[in-house]
Length: 420
Image (tube, rainbow, N blue to C red; front, side, top):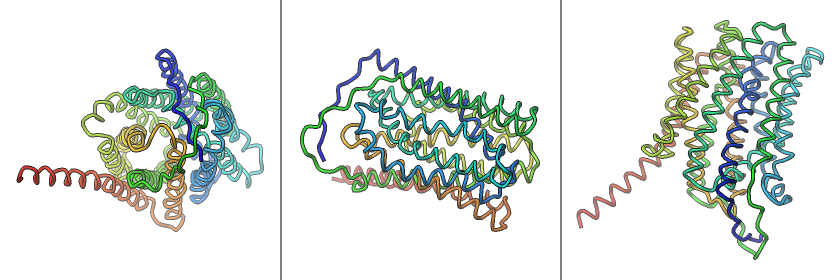
């Protein structure tokens, strides 16, 4: 392997322009993402999807993402900079918003299979895109303090547009005839996704520096601090996603809520996530990135328990708000900040991003399958949701343990010095 010279820096004006384009990117993407994140499972349920098929709808794409992320370093090295490397993968992953439109045109027995196939195939470019995009974020926003502010601003923009999209789509789906209502929703979602793509392509980053001399191969898994990061990322994503496919079943099939309530559920969840984004930068200074993760996972665990034990619409909406705020704090901001602290931004950054995304990809495959298999085996959805809540509490403990161990070591060291 050959190492590269340090990359040139970008100007302050370019960094400011990148900040605006990265917020615009996620704002447009949020409108599109509302269609798949909020209503794709409901769409499949309306087509008589089984619990196992719902698990495959979210689990198989993660498995493909896990495999394709291994190609990220090879793909990135074929282009002069990371924005150029993103051009085709980030466009390919956005095809997930248009392909579901064609499902009602197929025979009834193939419709759910088409949805699974559409999400699985588009996960191949998504795996490459996710890794390169993480590397691009750090190159487009080299100032660490500005990066934290950007993450909070992107989270705010994402949740506002997700909420607006979920509300608008939900009202339309409630009023429009099936399946025309869903087909038009996915068409609008793809248009928004294309605007997000245009914002990405306007980013300015340094070109890849020339190769200089041979250097040792970067091995992220050989570093204990990275293994700890990967374990935390894996456990929290397994725990969180283990019941994500079960929640729509609980709300739609058991409690008989319709698309209108699902839109309100999403609006509350995303509104809470947007509000928490305003306070996270201050909370990060007090709690640290690991502290944000611990608090976030504990919050999602309480939300799962509320969803399991209550049939009251008010309590369920409270659980939605708690879940949205907690997951945004713990994963969208806390986990990425932890990743930024534990991995280098220069040489080997793509390899670290690849290994990190592989941990999450494996979790996103395993997590949904756990809940779906439990539900398919005849276990009550209430018990499945309570199991997911217990797993989320476990993820908080796994994250908290090394934090407490570090504080204990520091205390012992301080005590020892004082005794001397």
